[in-house]
Image (cartoon, rainbow, N blue to C red; front, side, top):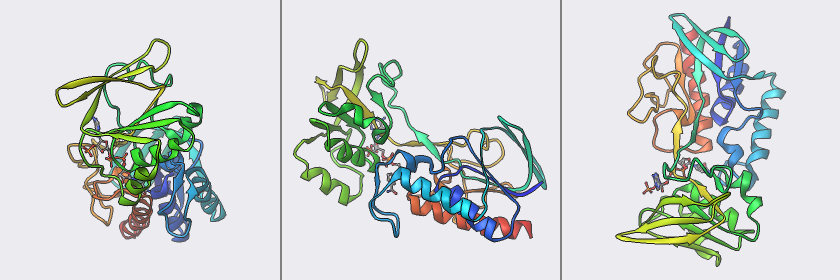
Length: 299
Ligand code: NAP
């Protein structure tokens, strides 16, 4: 029986683990991926995490892991399959075993949203990608498109522009929601072109991506690209907890800054929690707050 189990080893989960271990709680962290960091791992460069300007996403994930290890945090690479609330005891079934804990922090984060157009699923991995930092290097000297107007789309476009011949950013509105500093970077790049008020209707290609069917207002057009990077937001990974705690209509767990959910002993931290600003640093802050609340609950 653990005092606390944390699901997810991204910035929220690892920050929670560090606070929990220092608070003397018996602790287990469960992470489905072989590496700590969560979505951070898909980022080429992180320029707004305090104290580590310009750090590569993978290196930041490694720092989270090393920090945890230094304090004796144990991260098990397992996937949670089922979750049961037995009042004072929460039970988890994973791909490797069954665990019991008095308190639980759900810090499983979020995954890429799909564009949900024809050709996307068929050509996934054949020119359709959700991770520029992972797959971008395959497109050296080629023409690519990034779909979306948020931080991820802008970061992806800046990254791809370093080695792609041309990068189109396809955005459905006339304004980006990405941070101003990223917008400025994009504007300065001669090989980036933003296609405003434009939607991707279809992704086409025989063996791999060849062309996009676009719609701008009433007009349809075609754009030849070899790669399309989809960055249209995230969906919370909360399927397993939705039956136990209240969530909003998009599946984000309802919990305030104290990370307390509607179920006693279950706390929500990071991108899985309903909040207005999803950043690495706000996820890390959630981890600390969730442990403070879990500590009060356990006491
Ligand atoms: P996001 O901020 O939600 O942006 C998603 C973008 O995709 C928006 O521009 C949206 O258009 C567009 N979009 C959504 N659905 C679409 C569809 N069906 N077709 C076409 N376009 C669509 O998502 P994100 O960029 O993935 O970022 C996720 C979160 O992580 C954000 O809160 C972001 O700030 C955060 N983040 C933080 C860091 C950091 O800490 N350094 C780095 C990256 C991301 P509209 O603008 O019209 O809605």
